[in-house]
Image (cartoon, rainbow, N blue to C red):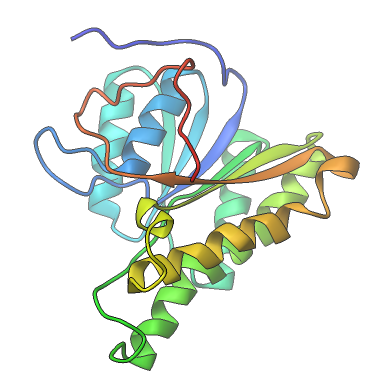
Length: 215
């Protein structure tokens, strides 16, 4: 099967969180697909995942295609780990231009039966992590004249607010707007939010003519 390559991200350095493989066979995780597409377009990618084995699977795919990537095992809810991942991108590749916040979790239940500890964990992973990774990525982007932060949330967040997963993804969409407000006009650093569902195949199809649609 032919792999489409290009140069839209030539010379760019990106961090993708949740970049490890999350399935088997033809199933491709979202972070895995993003990482593959970025390297196919010329970017160098720091593959961030808490599971080294899964990240190594993505790395092997990228290497097989001739791309450039490095694995970073880290925890996006830990401030030290987030600082270290930004430092790792810069020490390995010399700069940082793109941050993709792809990590997210959810679960069943409504506000009347969700456990407080689980709620706190979801908020740490889905919302706090975006603040922490951005906190250290933005200064590095500014040094290189600006950059882009892409925050992914679940397509479930477009549904009825009564669903627990939806209530946990909508704050990220609002948080993306708040995060973006101070930066673009003075630094060139931009932030956007997008919804996503699972890619269908290991070919990770992508077309610049069909960008994702936000709800």
